[in-house]
Amino acid sequence: MTPLPAAAPRVVVLTGAGISAESGVPTFRDSGGLWEGHRVEDVATPEGFAHDPDAVLRFYDARRRAAASALPNAAHRALARLEGALGASVLVVTQNVDDLHERAGSRNLVHMHGELRRALCVACDARPRWSADLADRPPCPVCGQRMLRPDVVWFGEMPYDLDRIENAVVACDVFVSIGTSGAVYPAAGYVALAAAFGARTVELNLVPSDAVVPFDESRAGRATDIVPAWVDEMVGRS
Ligand code: OAD
Image (cartoon, rainbow, N blue to C red; front, side):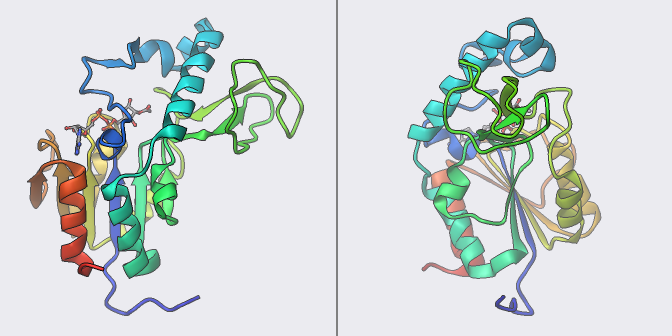
């Protein structure tokens, strides 16, 4: 492994739906509280799934296909460039369930709200990579039961990798939040945690969010403009 330069700043980047908006993936709260025309309670809760599993599986099958046909944009690519320049001292924590960060080249990445590209077996807890539909109830490749659901964290469920994320947030020098409304915890609390442990905090968003703890710096604009510009300032143009 290549040793990191001693002076590489530790950077945690929290991303939300706004970074994928210009790739054609709709955000949540810019569309009147509906997600692709569905109430969040119907398609993003365990209760909604228990009530109408077929509808929920079809909903995520449609999201998976839409995400697969979307392309990473200049903001995703800029974050991959940041990691390329600073190495493993950059951690991208995304709330997004699309795979545009990894397709842009980010490797040190946490999907805290899960991934459309994985299934979760309700019978055996396996989380296989998945690109096909789930509504036709395919068997789990590990246990064979036909009880797969999308590996997406629903309201009331525990996000993934919280220990790893919190350890990185308390240790980082720079915390940057991109394209998230800061409405959903625990992600919304990370700016306060980072600030309490001495990080410089930056928000890059279409409009500044109503963060409980204000960011040290807030830049407004489209992600495809302001993220590459910020990365240029961090590591220079390549
Ligand atoms: P939201 O829809 O709540 O917020 C999207 C944010 O992106 C808003 O602050 C917009 O101003 C901003 N935005 C929109 N277009 C943008 C652009 N072109 N450039 C930059 N910013 C832009 O989405 P999230 O904050 O990601 O959780 O939502 C958080 C969580 O709530 C999601 O992960 C999901 C949802 O319910 C679960 O499914 C568990």
